Length: 481
Image 1 (cartoon, helix red, strand yellow):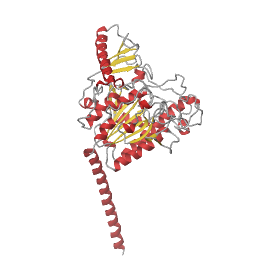
Image 2: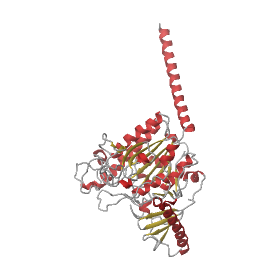
Image 3: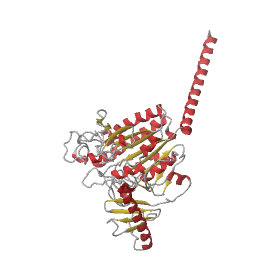
Image 4: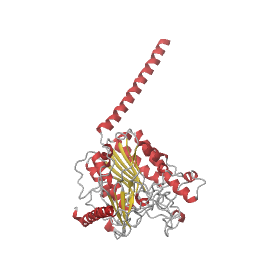
């Protein structure tokens, strides 16, 4: 009897061991299959009004951002990463098209819409077998023709351009800003972005999931968590159905109205009240980015997923908004400015299979580069994009150890113009009537205008800038379509 028990016991242990080994082997094979045979997944993450200096990994001594810090330590950290505009809407369109916003008519926030003739990343990837989802702030057109919503919805039918008509299968999308805590409810006036709204009433923005259909549940608490609660099931479903996915996650944090929950306020005890809310909502967003990364690892798709993180423009800093205390770090300017503080933003890229160790990249890069970089990384030969692409495939440059950008980056916003190459930046505050020149390698803070010392460089860059502006105008007149 005793022998029989021992035999049963050891047999059970051996079978359990074999089962564990087989299970581990299956997971390994599954992961290898996903890494070697599956199309890479793509995730674009964007914060709203997050300054270059608002994250710990760029030297902020207040911000608690452990998950972003870890991403910067393990992936590509871009020291000179630029939003294509110093304001929100134009930059968002550049991420999806690879084209400067002045080519397709979104010159400023709440102006114009993404045109149907433009070929978006979402449409290209959908045509290549991806399931696509947009989550968070849209700001590239209105989402309803039938009722008042956010900044323009209902009353502005000419600019109706929702994500579900621009290549996205799944949506949880708000037209513009919402409070960073309890996003559907008007917060206290001190949060900013409230206007004449009454505290405690409905804020007046909705999360739309399809034409004429709003989300109605799970809309309380931290807005970044509310968004991520929709992202996670989207990714789980895609993985379970063996579909590659493209997920655009555009957080509202830390744009006004700035509100943090009690647990995040406590993390910043001792700081002024406005800093508690501002950095509290940033830490809440960082927590959700960590949750996303953990889910990718749990699903065994972390090595086969390309992740980008950035901000749509530089920080808001007061301007009548008491909790907007963002930092551009050492850089001059802020949101709405084409000085560095308005357009130099945090930039990170992860791709477990291709990027094995962390690198710091000093080459000037831009949100314009997402489109060509992703298309080429996925091996898509014919993206069908109309006209001029302003971005470059920076991953191939980095992998080939090329340290300089082959073409400069052009900027236009309101009356400002700028052109940035590997060494110099040409800047005009008055539509090209006068110019300033800065040596970005030796004077990134833009403290010493050297235009008078280098007229030949100014003339050369003015010519390049003017040619590019003419090209943008030609595109904006519809000649690319």
